[in-house]
Every structure is written in structure tokens, then in C-alpha cells.
Amino acid sequence: MTAKQFVTLFAWITLPFLMLTCCLNYLIDGSSTHHLPGETSVFHRTTEHSALSKLHYLSRENPETIYFGSSRVEVGLPANPDLVEGGKVYNAGLSGASLGQWVPFVRHNLALTEPKKIVVGIEFTAFTTKAGTSDLDLSLLSSNYITYLIKRIPLDLSQSLSLKATLNSIKAITASYKDEAFDLGLSKSNLGQSTAAFMQRAEYDAADKEFKKRLKQAFAKPSKDIADEKSWLLFDNLVAEICQKNIVTRIYIHPTHALTFYAIRQNGEWSEFEQWKIDLAKLATRYQRQQCDIRIVDFSGYNSITTETIQSWSPKKALQYYWEVSHYKSNVGELILKRLFSSTTADIPKDFGRELRQDTIADVLTAIREEQSRYLLSHSEDIKLAQQLLSVNTHKTALPN
Image (cartoon, rainbow, N blue to C red; front, side, top):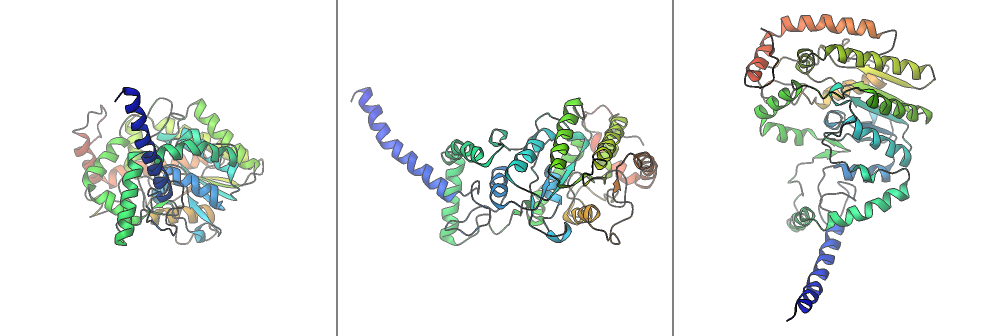
């Protein structure tokens, strides 16, 4: 057999097999990349809402209220219509997304959908145009629906030919044959939000390790391009576009645990952190004067939620409001949404959530500084726990006694 004959025979054998595999993987779609997660189908699929499935969901369902931001949004904000004054709601938070990733994602959805309300969760340490760790493929983002569909064709084909898609298809077929859930009975996402059951398994399997990892990340020096000119221009342009479309806009600073904000102070970034809030207050006031329905609310700092006592590193034992120091639970997300939308605030702690405007920012910053001093005195055990962790950390700044 000649080389030419061998190549021809090989092609005749493999190409039909590859085409069949591609078609089956695309049809089965075990990873729910181009089907709505959880929809009824012949083959069982994952309930997890990945970046690809979130793109697909938003292009199909056109919810009235959409949440955007990082994994803190994805984990913490429940997609409950009652908390946002009704209508279809979707959590489009993206794990690992920086400002440079979720802003284009928002603009893509503004072009393809017509939301009435947008909620955006922001954080100082990820306020950068530098790429985060989200698996969102920015090349798919488009200014119209047809272009988006065309861009998805080669991606969906390549996905369908991947080993991962094939393994997911095998898993889907096996699960369907046994009449078992693809995710072994564990629903991973609910309307884009990571479920408590999924978070509990993910965090509790290695609770101590995950808690320490998140705190170490908090004490790592932020990159130098945090809240730089490029970041502000990107953010400002997005807010302008949202306001032009007369969309109700609620932006909030995440209430991560108080130790993460203390880390900012220890890293010598506190003055930059406060300036960031001052600039946010100016931005909010500027657009409010243009009759834009926008509010920016600060849940960060040292309040009755963020100062929850950490009696051990393990969320199994202590934490009511947090999975670890970075990600808060849905009960905190409910309070956030009530503060952002509800006129009734009786069940919300009075110190949880301060609106940032030019006429309030000075008082907000002063109050947080005073609360920080009280926190150091009243939560010495938490500080000691952090000291124990950071004593084996290579970071040059140590917590004080």
C-alpha cells in the first residue's frame, strides 16, 4: 500500500467517524453550552451555567433584570423576582471576571437584549482592564444577534470535536440510560446563580484549604493598573451607554469579609481604595444630575455582616454569611438587593449599605475609618488567626499584634 493509498483509506475511515462524533456531541450537548441548562431533553445535561451557556441564555430569554460581575455576584445574588420588584431575572456573574471582561459582556448584552434593570457588583482589586480568569471567550461578543450566531458556529464545531465534549456525551448517555441526573442529583446553578448545595460541596470538601487560599489572595499586592485611567474610561463609557438606554442601574461594592478590607490597608492601598470610592461617588452624582436612574451603594468595610467572627478556618463550624472571606452567601445577597430596590428596610442592618454620592462620601469614609479602629479591638481573635496563616506566607507585610 502506497502512502497516498494509506492516507486516503485513513481519511475515509476517520472523517465519517469524526463527523458522526461531532454531530452527536452537538446534539447531546452534555455541558449545556448551546441549550438552556435544565431544559427538558432526551439526554440529561449539566445544570451548570457556564460562560457559554450564559451567553446562550441571555440571547434567547431576554430577562428584564440582569446581574453582572465576578464570582461574588454569581455565588451571592439570588435571581429572585421578588427582590427586584418583579420580572424575569438572571444572574450573569462570571467566575474570575475582571472589569476588562465583564464590561464587554455587559455591552454585548445591551446590544442583543433589552433589560429594564441592571445590577453590577464591583470590587477594588478587580477594577482593571487586565484580563481575569473567566472562561468567557471575548471573541464571541458582538454588536448584533446575527453576527453573534455566526461567530458561534466555528466555536460550537470545535467544542463538539473536543475530548471534553465526547466525555460529557458519554456521561449524558449513561445518566439518561440509568435515569440519573447528569450532576448526580446536585443542581449546580439556578438561573445563573451557583446553588448553595454546589457551594457547600465545593467549599466543604477542602474548607480549611480554600479559606486560607482566599485570605492569602486578599493579602497579595494588587496589580499596579487597578483603577487606572483605562479602567475608569471603560467603566464610565459603559455607565453612559446604560444611562442612554434609560435602564435602571444599581452598582454596589461587594461586602467581602472585613479581613479582606483590612488586607488592603496592610498592603498600603487604603488611600487608593478611598480615592476609588470618591471617584465612584463623583460618577454617580454626575449621571444622577443627567436624570439617570443610577445608585452606587457601598457594602464594604466593617459592618454587622462583614465583621462576622471567624471562630475557625472552616465554614462548617462558624460562618453564617460567608463561604470563606471572599464569597458571601445568598442571605447576604438578599439584603443587598433589598437595600438596592426596596423602600422597606426594616429587616436590613442599618450599617449595611451606604450610598455613594458627592454629598455623602466624606461621611462614609470617616465612618469606615472609625469602624476599622473598633474592629481591630473587638476582633483580636480573627486577627490572630490571620497572623497564624500569614506567618507562613511570603508576603512582606505582617499583621500587627
